[in-house]
Image 1 (cartoon, rainbow, N blue to C red):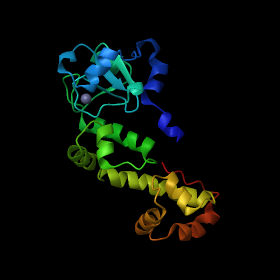
Image 2 (tube, rainbow, N blue to C red):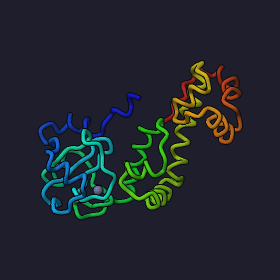
Image 3 (cartoon, rainbow, N blue to C red):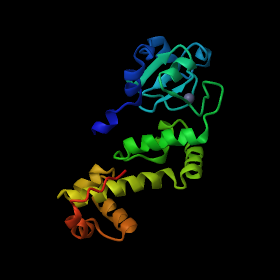
Image 4 (cartoon, helix red, strand yellow):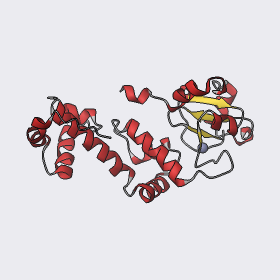
Length: 212
Ligand SMILES: [Zn+2]
């Protein structure tokens, strides 16, 4: 899944070159892994996959070390294009909900092909599942899982209309690796089985239905 390799931080690195953070030292890595409060104010860490930066003590799920960069302070991390974590508030200010959820929605767009749970999404976006779910729904009008489901259905429709891949293959491609489950959900949401959808829309394949 190539798309998952599009790290937020790497595109920023191209634009901000010399301001980009450093690899974590072993000492810094231990501080992050242990949520060590005594390192708060000493350095900031940023996670390339989510584009968010945190205090060492942040209670968010510990990221993979290779995705983490260290900065001296919050302003450096912000200058490199990272956004402050909603949970540990490394700049001392809360991130507006709109901004947080816009980052979260981008994350879902890049990762919906993975079979993600609400817990995993909330972890990636540095929030508790309950708070994340509520805030997402407030801003977007749909729950995060419904949002992800819409992306999957759009992508599945596009693939059914424009390829001859099997339903099982397409289910796998859009994040529903269990074929019977994919077929059931697809039918519930569109009123058609994947095969019926395909025969109805195959003739329109010259119209490219881009999912986003
Ligand atoms: Zn944090």
